[in-house]
Image 1 (spheres, rainbow, N blue to C red):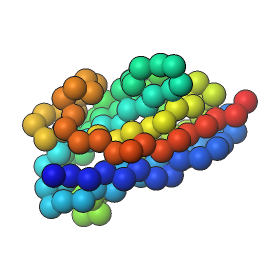
Image 2 (image 1 turned 90 degrees about the horizontal axis):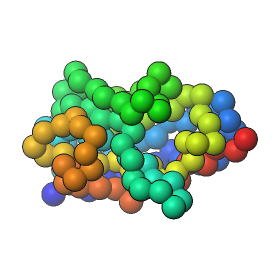
Image 3 (image 1 turned 45 degrees about the vertical axis):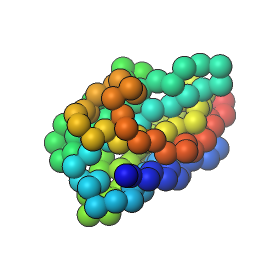
Image 4 (image 1 turned 60 degrees about the vertical axis):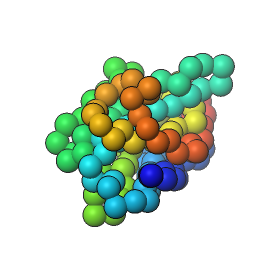
Length: 124
C-alpha cells in the first residue's frame, strides 16, 4: 500500500512557476513508476508527465513539453513537477499517481494509487 500526498499548488500569474511535490509513504516507492495527471472543471482527467522507477525515463504530454519537468528523489520518497511558463490553460487539480507494474505511461487506468490532488490556478 502506498499513500500519496501532493503539495505546492496555489495561485500564480500567467508566465510564473510552481513546483509540486508528491510525498509517498511505504518502503517500495523506489520500485514504482510515478505520474502526474490533472483535471480541469468540466473536463476529463488528463496525463501530464510520468517518470520511471529509476528516474531514467520520462514522458510528457505535448501540451506541457518544454515547460514542465518531472523528477524524483527516491531517498526522500518524493516526486516533483516543476512547472514553468504557466498559462491559464494549466489551471486544474493536479494529482500524482503510482504504478506498481509498469510505466511510465499516460494511461490513468494503469496506475494503482492516487493522491487527493492539489489545486493550481493560473490567472491571466
